[in-house]
Structures are given as structure tokens and as C-alpha cells.
Image 1 (cartoon, one colour):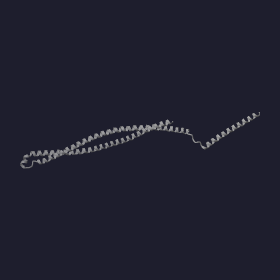
Image 2 (image 1 turned 30 degrees about the vertical axis):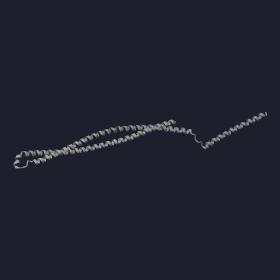
Image 3 (image 1 turned 90 degrees about the horizontal axis):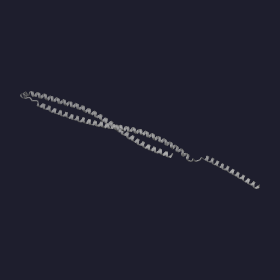
Image 4 (image 1 turned 180 degrees about the vertical axis):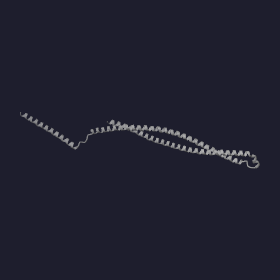
Length: 238
């Protein structure tokens, strides 16, 4: 019985240790899963914000580029018209003394150069912004895919560990039930083996019975002795 008790206690301790390890693993996995879910949420929000900003930047670029392009085309048209006009009337201009329009054309050409420069700048900014957006979006996709894969495996590991913990708990409870039964049996056997103090009335009754038995025995012995002496006396007289 003592050996059985020790065996069950060892099994319970072993199972309890494995349960503590499983519980620790579940807590760690729960924390990892929460962190991964938070990271995925952050990535999703960041990508959404990037998409909205990129759309707004693209719309602004389209509007600016359209304005600059239209401005350039308008200026170019004006320069062409002026050049054609002043080119055809060069003789008239010389005889009349009127200006040939070169100053106006010069101003328009400067304006055309400025618009062209501005268009080039916004196109360069748009190209850079689009390149950064595409690069960051791809990085976010890769990061999200990695975190989703990690989340999938950790969730699977967590479910398996929880199942293992349930089995360990069942085994531990079974061992505990068997140990309780052994301890109960051991307690009963121990009670039977340990002498209980005899109550006073029982001791008194037992002693009275013993005294009565001794008295009866003495009476019998005395009776036999008297009979033996009487027989011996009669034999002497004969």
C-alpha cells in the first residue's frame, strides 16, 4: 500500500510538472498571437492610410500636371501666333517704326520655361512618391504574409497544447482519484493496526470478569483439596 501511494504521488508530480509547462507555453503563445494580431492590424491601418495619401497625392499631381501642360501649350500657341504675325509684317514694322514683338515673345518664352520646369518637378515628385509607395506596399505585403503564417502556426500550436493540457489534467485527476482511494484504504488499515485506549467501563467489566474467573478457579481448587484430604483421612483409619 505504501509503495502504491508513493507511485501515485510520483506520477501526479510528473503530470503536474508537464501541466505547468503546458500552461506556460499556452500563456506565451497567447501573448505571441496577440502581438501578431496587433502587428497585422497596424500594418493594415498603415497601408490604408498610405493608399488614401497616395490617391490624394495622385489627384493633386494630375491637377497640377494638367494645369502646367495646358499653360505650356497655351504659351507655345501664343508664341507661334506672335512669331507668325510679326514675321509677316516685318517690312511694315520697319517702315512704321513699331516694335517687332520680340519683348513679348521673350516674356512668353520665359513663362514657358518656368511652366516646363514646374511640370518636370511635379513629375519627378510623383515618380518618387509612386516608387516609395510601391516599395513600401510590397514590404508591407511580405511582412503581413510572414506574420499571417506565424499566426497560423502559433494558433495551431496553441490548440494542440490546450488539447494536451486537457489530457494531462484528466490523467492527473485519475491518478489523484486512485491516490485518494489508496490513502483511504491505508487509513482504514492503520486504524485497525493501532490499539485504541480501552474505555474505563470496559476495563472494569473485563477485570471483574477476570476476578470472577479467578475466584471460581480458586473455589474449585479448594474444593478438590478438601475432598482429597478427606479421602486420605478415611484411608488412614481403615
